[in-house]
Picture 1 (cartoon, rainbow, N blue to C red):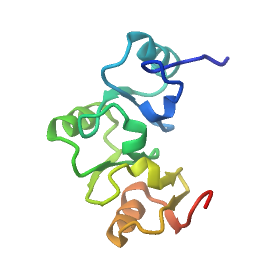
Picture 2 (spheres, rainbow, N blue to C red; picture 1 turned 60 degrees about the vertical axis):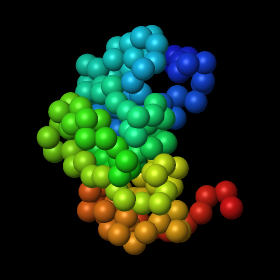
Picture 3 (tube, rainbow, N blue to C red; picture 1 turned 90 degrees about the vertical axis):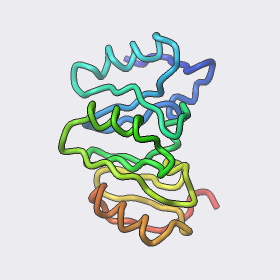
Length: 144
């Protein structure tokens, strides 16, 4: 069954949430109805974590994730990282990434098998993607 959902009057739910096969991250600070939909539908199957990165609510844009790991921007606070680490399954690798592109979700499209990455991502970031997310990477552009 499909459910219509908004976050603070925005239908761009993917900006405010990141979902994998093993966990879901939802932005902190929204309406209770937003969280209850995730918790009711996903909560019985995977952990639903209320999170923020870099003190923002746009967590879907700020991180890259799959069922093996989570990459967060270097500017993620220690407290934000601690909350996430405490709520995710132990086998999930979490890594801060020092990268000039801080909105990692905008420059890394990843699943459990492959990652499409921005052509200008740092080589060190590409190695972190390989190690933490356990996928092969391909530098490419999408839609120009």
